[in-house]
Length: 521
Image 1 (cartoon, one colour):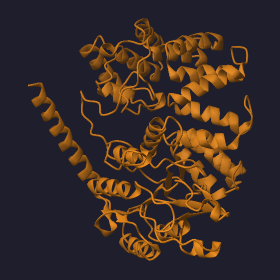
Image 2 (tube, helix red, strand yellow; image 1 turned 135 degrees about the vertical axis):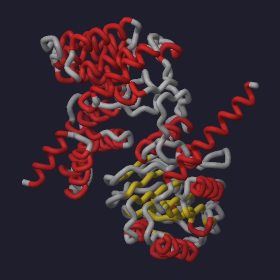
Image 3 (cartoon, helix red, strand yellow; image 1 turned 120 degrees about the vertical axis):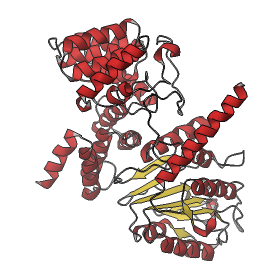
Image 4 (tube, one colour; image 1 turned 60 degrees about the vertical axis):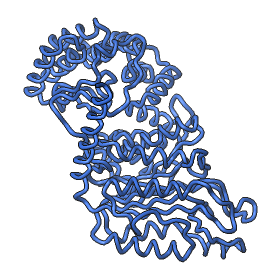
């Protein structure tokens, strides 16, 4: 009987994915997928052809029109040129353009080149003439006027020319993404990625699997890909992103379905801290309207698929009704006490908020401990007392709550209510970054940008901001705007700075709005 039930559930999930995917494909999506393995005069690669086939099959299942009907394999220079020309033609009237390449890719003089299978070794000029400059690919896509442009490059494998052409380096150089463009590299700039020993590269295997998850926005999708590759390679390969602000939302597999109560989670649960409540009390698999209307962003106590909502965005009347119903129906689930406390907090009934937070904290709900600290820091129903706030934040940190690490880290960084302790602040931020908290990425990125508490490192600041942007964090988008506006480690670019400020401001970031005002003066 259990096997029949499992089969039925898989059929239901498959039907659900089909419905979601169908709804998502009203837009016209066009992809060119190329995999080069059978190189004629340089080192052959075992996996790109299989990687391209896997990617083509995945994109076809997600509603993409794939140029040529499938993966284009082992293209010589003439074949590459013809495929790009056909790609440009098919993009007319399209909404989304996607270019995927697996094979040899190299960098020379700051330019990136993709290597056809018939490349010949002669003088530098001849080599470059027989390769494909990435700027041609970008030009082909930009001329089409598509809303979203995606370039996925599994082309950072070893240098096929090695010492024979001194001007050519392994890996690809960092590229600035034009407007509406998102570039994903299999690894960091000028680094070499793994080809893989199981038939597929770690990057493409992770990519093909992650693209099929419903409900993942563009940035979150590639953050998940990066985490999967990092895990598969024991941290030896870290995918890299370059993006300009993207207008609107994009989901490869459609938005996740919503229902009054959801009993199935499609996302893996985060490991529980030993001091947390057991899963049968947390019930992360249970999603109600109380969670949707009052769940806290990045709260590890609710389902990982929930984005959460900021306190000032809570619809108090609706959330009050939903959370009262949830507490009555599920009296043993501490999360609903906490979320009801947030609703009371939003309506400025601080006594009720504290009562509910205390009840949730009493049974070990870590985020409630953190929010009590927030009441002391913000003077909500009590006088401002940063020392008392730090005491509550520390309790939450000891219970394993990552957001509390950011809040305590801020007090340690600034010396508000506690003795200033840069080393502990940095350690707290680093731990929270590893837990995936975007505000930690922003705070630590700002430290590296300013050279405060750490040695100034513009590249590390940029990496942290990009990591936060992958999770949709507005403050990190503002930080990226600062980098381009001030030329911190990159050429100054007012256009990109303005785009990042505008994107952050559209998500409610007040500092970004101020920065836009300054730019207009």
